[in-house]
Image (cartoon, rainbow, N blue to C red):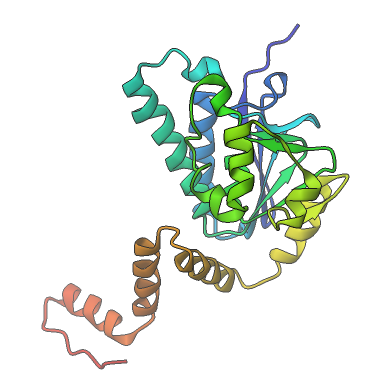
Length: 259
């Protein structure tokens, strides 16, 4: 029997990037290496102007992602658990949420714990009819740590988050569609996201990037950094900026035109 190492695959096909969680034997649950690979892939995608949309999915048809592998964090000290595992995962998921490209989660199966938080970090989601989502952390004596009580709580009704986190209930595709958490319920979630992405990659990449930043700033998603980024983008297009750089290089006093 061949042992397959768990990982996150990145496939770029023209303007579309696909991230696939590849740990099907454990329902695509996250390991330490998978978190590191996801972070690395996001850096690659952000640095590729030719990539205009991103799909996030899981290998197989049983689960999108069942959360974090308990073997990865179960033996950590309290300090390491909070400082490294939780904060690292939160930082990486924030990186996904703030990616300049439009992102779509193809929930090809169940999404529990960190898997649901991963889906929440994407811009929109498509789910298969029989898939469910849950926040089962209390069942193993922990709490949601990768934005389940924060970002997810802004995307679905508070009562739904409490239903999952406090009462251990699973939520089905129909209710998720009704509350707007998923954009579509499709028998083939991956194919549906491909169709959505095909339209996204035809739109202006600069317009979608700036619009996404404006939407996030409006809801408080890293608003301080986004405000400065938008301001910097505006000033970068001015003659004043060109004159300032030229004067610095020429070692002279700048004469700003004010345009």
